[in-house]
Image (tube, rainbow, N blue to C red; front, side):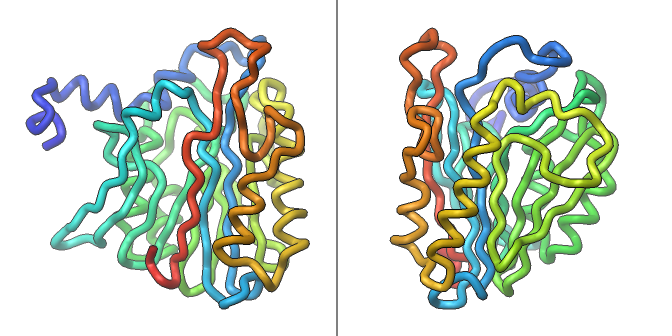
Length: 271
């Protein structure tokens, strides 16, 4: 459908939806470059929020040139949940939520086993999550279909359940909220991890962003709602490599990333 509507070849749309895999397929096992990007993601369970709602969201950090190709889609489906998502033109799923009360947001992670091989592309997995009716269905899909590269995702349900899934090519690892708060960035946090984290060296600010986001949310626990969540997403500690990321002018233009989108999804109200 996307190929027909856009006038592009089917193979071109397939390649576009495998962008994540193609982008990281030929990275060296231990990156020698200094990255200037990476997302900060979060979810808040009812016990942490002022109105006992469930929130999920992120700061999406990526290349500035991509911003003009981004859009928000509302997808109405007959036999699957309706979806509202933020994505890039031609990519059938990224971050968003559905009418069944499920929301999902991604963040980059990388391990030593990431490679260019067969597997279910990341953004197809995200569409599978947004097509799901329940949280167990989401987890079953992630445990059934392997992918060639690692990715982190925070998944939440409007009834108050929150989980973080660190996917590697060979296994999945799970993290749960503390005091109703869950944050993640671009390094593995599971104590059960059995592979080497090769992405954090390229994104050293990840270990600060994830912890700082948790601490800022914790300070406002019980009073978390739209405005207080915005305050956390606007944080500039460590500028320009902060939760709210700005272009690092010390780097070449093609290496500069920035926060393109801040997302606050209220799953309880579905908006």
